[in-house]
Structures are given as C-alpha cells and as structure tokens.
Length: 280
Image (cartoon, rainbow, N blue to C red):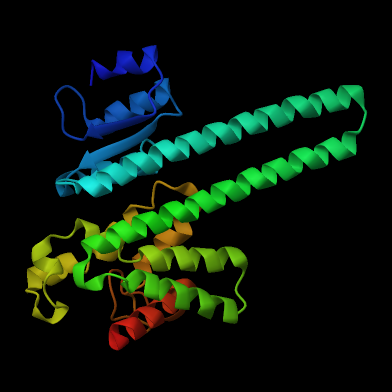
C-alpha cells in the first residue's frame, strides 16, 4: 500500500484492485487514500466473509466501486475490471462533453447570436450521450447476466426467462418507465448472489441441502444486493434483488417482510420466478 500511493500521484491509473488484508494498511483504507488523491480512479476490493463489515462500511462511504469475494472467479474479476474501466471512460467522455457544453454556452451568451438554435444542438448531443450511457449500461448488465448464468449450471437461462415476463407484467400494470427498467434489470440479476456460493451448494436441489447449506443458500439475495450497493443510482435494483424471495405471509427470506412491505417490483419478480421454476 505504501508503494502504491506515490504511483497514484505520479501517473493516471484507471482501476485499482486491492486486497482487504495487507501489511501496514487495510485495503479499504488504501482505497480511501486513492480516492482522495485520484477521485476518478475506479476502486475494487477483494475481500472474504470475515471482512464483510469493513467492506460494507467502505461501500457506504463511497470508497469502492465494487467488491469481489475471495476466492474469486477469474471471469467475474476480468468482467468487473472491464466494466470499471468502461464506466470511467464513459464518465470522462460525459464530463468532457458537459465541460464543452458549458464553454460553448458562455460563448453563446457573450455573442448573443443564434442562442436558441445552438442550445438545442447541445441539448441534443447531451441526450445522445445519456442514451449511449443507458445503452452501454444495459449491455453491461446483459453481459454480466450471461456470464453469471454460465456459473449457475442448471439455472442457466433462468434469469433471462424471468426478466422479460417481469417487464411485460410491469408494462401491463402501467408502471412508470424507470420502474419497469429497474424490474427488468433486477430480473436479469436477481440470482447474482449465486456467484458467491460454492459448487457443493449449487449442485444440489434445495430440498436436499443441509441446514447449514440452506442458510448459506438463503443468503444469496443479500449477496446479490450488496453487489449493487456501490451504485448510487441503482439502490432500487439492489432492494428488488434483496427482497425477491420474501413472501406475502412473512415466511420468506432474508428479512421476513410481509404484505406491502415487500416492494411491488419484488412481488412481480417472485411471481415470475416461481412460474419459471414450475415450468422448467
């Protein structure tokens, strides 16, 4: 860690991947220092279950972009680093475009010529940039969903089969566009927590799990939600992932919510999730 910090100050680093347990300084503390020296550097933390409290604190303080459980899956790690680099690139392009827009608007105010037309042009470019960010975001989600389902074995295809019906139900109910998209994304990633479970659990039917294995299995909504905690704009998706196994009578997990305490999108996911289980 002590050798890493001068490098951050001397050259531009796009992504830092740090272990949590290291000599002299914890990974969360190192990434806090990285953020102070280079706010635009994307920060990823490798951590074990024993360090979960410190990891959650690091997420809540905005120190890290995402965390990965040890031992990690190489494909997941590569994809996470790629997504972090792509997100930084998109944010850099967006910031550059916004800075350029501000400069041109100042020129327009000073010249007072063709103001309305040129503002419309810049607004159109910003809209296109935001559309590009949205498309790239959905593409990244779909890529990660495909990689995730390769890990899921017998569950391959399940999330995609849930996402589209969930979106159709939400549209039919007349829900707002933003809520429909959140439900669709949560449908693609609602079983993300399985990535953190060992093969010994994933290879067994739920009914044959030991009590200890079942307890680990029932943590997968929490693990999946934690992966989204670092994204400020997607807390709703994290909530839907966490609560999609709750039941209306309060017998679900992980929080035993009841009735309308369960978010509407999670209730939709619960229906299509169960329907897919029954039909497949």
